[in-house]
Length: 167
Length: 423
Image (cartoon, rainbow over all chains, first blue to last red; front, top):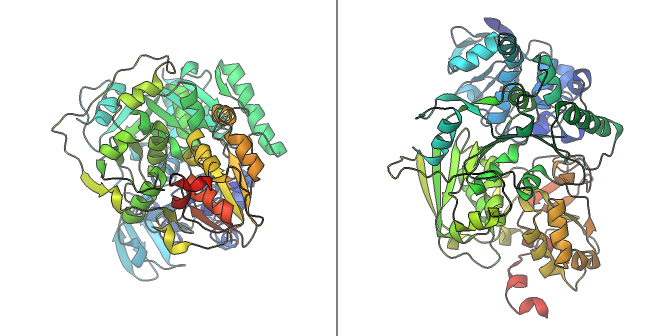
């Protein structure tokens, strides 16, 4: 896990569901290069065009609610999302994100503190978010020790691989 | 401790767990559906060679049943091959139905078990006092590789349901009403237990619909303490030995809610959010192009029966399509034997192969731009059942059937009052 990430904010509202993050009609796609083309297509058909690798997604409450589809994380990871910040996350989306090694950070108050396009820098060690555009500082809730361990290993696959090979 | 905590503690080989603790639990059954070949890819990327306990892994090919494209067919083929190679015998192919109904029909679900599936509606199995929760493909791969999964011990909310149910009000109306009141994020990370005289009188089918929909308020799992209704249903069905776990009387709930169901009337979730609930009577007369009865929420034999009761000897409105998707092969057979399939086909219904079908906008009744549907399923997000600019109203199967009859959103109550439906 990098100790800090920076990028432009792409802001979404409350209860953004996984059908909007990755519409059901594309679930049959299995290869990452196909899945990445449809990120956020249900919410904003031009999203992929306007997204640069390293950018940060900001959501409201219950971000990623709905289906268990891991495609919703695979697509956001494949386009290079460096972190996702939200007031709160739906639980399966949260697990999927952490498992695949994207920092998903719970950040109360973020909805009113960031607008689309703001330049953000997140210090993952200190737990702080600098909004360079608005010159404000925010903090996110610390992650649990186990989640931290998963992220530090770059995701749960690497962690399980270690466990299996040490048996 | 609560029964849920005792289930988690037992699976983690601990005598006690506390809220917020992360525990590594032995999983009794893990199910993968045909949307997620990623569970196999992740298993391989983890260096997995042999699935840890093949008898505790189950594959259900339900979302693409049967395949409508080459990609879907390839995903299913990969899963069949994987099951064969790994000695996984619990493979339910495209002739089976929706995983949650199939696992129940097959006697794989029992009180006190931990059931993990790559499907958000795994909360359904709380209806049997099982700990059921949904995960993504990679979590499922962790279970295939290790037999275990990490879980956070959740806060537990208890919802007491009392009062007399109004005619035309079902578990679906009650849960839509509750979600509307509390919000789509009310129970994130938390467990929701249902109790009270209304739950006591409800059938297993109604309890499953109730628990299923807690996903739409963010719940991790649902729970109903097993009783005689549960045990009568499971008798002769479940082969595993199980014991009934109970909560300690001094357990302290994170929150306790008391709901008088006599104040609830037929309810809809209006587009585009499940918590956008309102009384059906405020939306009478809205034209519907499609009426849909199906899914792990509202496609059981009881649901098809109520539709048949409303539509028998009548015709679906000429400007409305009625799509019926039995939740499983067993449900389909039950509805055939009862004559409900015949009654509905004669009324003009289109039957689709048991499975998930158009509930998630994949096949079997996709909506065009500008169309409106009323459906017994679980989600009405934009584009969920087809075009991004189509509208979905969630309702009970009875309300769906009454609306199919008239071509517009209709209160089912008058069709359910004795005598009136025979005129």
